[in-house]
Length: 79
Image 1 (cartoon, one colour):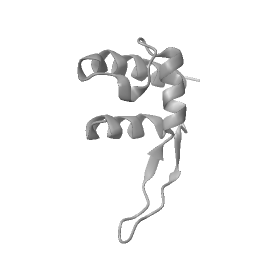
Image 2: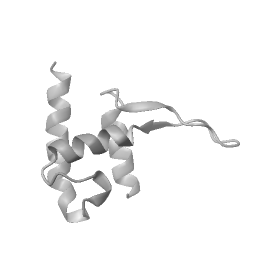
Image 3: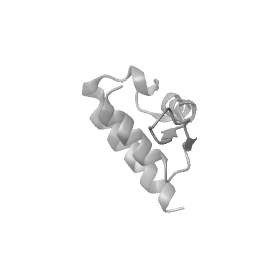
Image 4: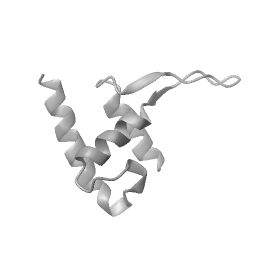
């Protein structure tokens, strides 16, 4: 998965509480928050427009997926 997509998934899942706690730090690197990949994939399979895991989407399919997930994200903020 590209770095941009990893960043986007972390960015959008953190306020939704879909991001887990900090991962273990390694050496001098600080701990970082990681998205709950299992939860993201479960949502993708159930609700995304092609019903497949995030890593299975091609670059060409991502714009529509991002728009769909952003709409879902905005609807969760209104609740």
